[in-house]
Structure formats: structure tokens, C-alpha cells
Length: 321
Image (cartoon, rainbow, N blue to C red; front, side, top):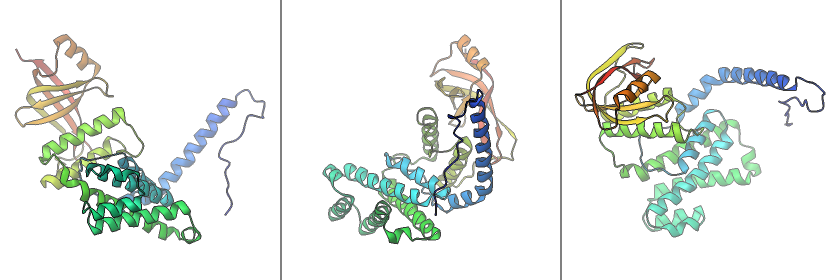
């Protein structure tokens, strides 16, 4: 197999005044090729995503989470070598993280092989977990050394190996940390997830995190259904859902895009994250509204294609005298 790499045309040796325009034209052509590839591969990408196991909500995280998420994306896009390598590094960091939480910080400087065996000797992990860690470690070493036996694996073999590595690592992560979850109330879990997502969008818009609000809504619906048995798809698509009453202003965040206010509805005991328009912000300033105050308000949301409330907006609001 030869390496064929000539995506960009080299204009530097050509005396052309509109060089930048030509580069822009070439980029547009590449965007078209990329979008065509994505369109052709979309079903396969989605099918591979559906092969990856869900493990629900786990509070304890570390740097390894980004690697697990990126490995999942790599697998979804058919980049199996990358997925295997990333999940191997993720599991090494996961193992270090667990060792530190188990007050075995001295194991951080050991090799993964020794670290796993020591944790097993200390009964910090069971034999099944140790075996899973070793399996992923072996796959990672195969990638790093890239010996002839590994090079000869078929695409189907690599796909199977990558999927097993990802699902095994997520199973290990869940078994080690799910019992440490501090949140057990479904409403608290939902609030925690929404807070984390909002923080992620503003401060850590990392490729590999939740893709966008659409995917976030899908994940939230599934988590709530799992924890409560209730499907929060409450209506058909494009239906207007309203809430009215007395709300407490829990947070005003003008750093987000769109700007947002968190309102707690006393009647139903739930919080709503409401997008603010410039007119809303101006009126809030005129009323000198602050966090902790109560207001009378009416808010609404148009259900999305999943039948779930999406962005909430304010119809009206006034101070309580």
C-alpha cells in the first residue's frame, strides 16, 4: 500500500495575486468531499456508536474520561488502531487514579503490570477486574510495539478488539466507582448532569465530550428513564409546554451563550434553565433582580423531535411586591 497525500495545492511558487481566494476555494471543495464522506458513512458511524455499552451516571472522574470519550469517537469513525491505543492509555490512568483513591499513591510510579498485580494482592480489586486491566494492557502493548502479528490482523479483527477494549474499560470504570456516587435522587442526578454539561460547554468545549445539546438531551432522557422508570419525552414534537407561578432565581449566568437564568419552581420543586434575550436582561436590570429573589413568571418550551422540552424561554416576569 502506498501513501498518497496531496490534499492541499501548493500555491507558494506560483505568482498569483488571488492566492488566498484559491485556497479558500480549495477548502470549500474539501468541505464538500468531507460532508459527502460523512453522509455516506453516517449509518455505519451510528451503528458502531450503538455497539458501545452505556454505563449510566458516575460522579468520580479523572483525566482518563477524555481519553475514553475520544476512544469511543475513534471507534465510531472506524479508527480502530486509535481506539485501542487511547483506551489503553485511559485504563492506565484509570488504574493510577483508583490506586491514589485507595491510598496506594506509591503505585503511581510502577508499571501498569505491577500496579494491577499489587492492587490485586491488596484486595483493592478482584481477580476479574485485574484480568480485565491486563487484557486492555496487552492490547495497548500490541499497538505500541506494532509487531507483525498485530499488523496482520484484519479490519474485522481490529474492530472486534477495539470494541471489546472500550466496553471492558467502561465496565471496569463502573464497577470501581459507581458505588461512590454521592447523588442517588433522580432529580439531583439530573441537575448534576445539567450543571456539568453547562460547565463543559463554557469552560471545556473539548472534542469528544457530549457533542451538542441534541445529544445531551438524548443522554439525559435515557438517564432519567433508567433511574426513575419515567420517560421524559412528554409530548409530540413542536408542542408548546408552559410553566407559570412563583420562581426563585437561583443563578444568573451572563457568561453563557445564550445567556441563562436558573429558576426554581416552588410548585413542582424543580429547576429550569431558561435562555435570556437582550430584552429580558435589560428588564432584569431595570427591576434590579438578583440571585435569591422570588419572581412571578411564565416560561415556555417547544418540544423537540424527541418529544422533550428543549430550550426554555420567558414569556413574562415581574417582581413580587
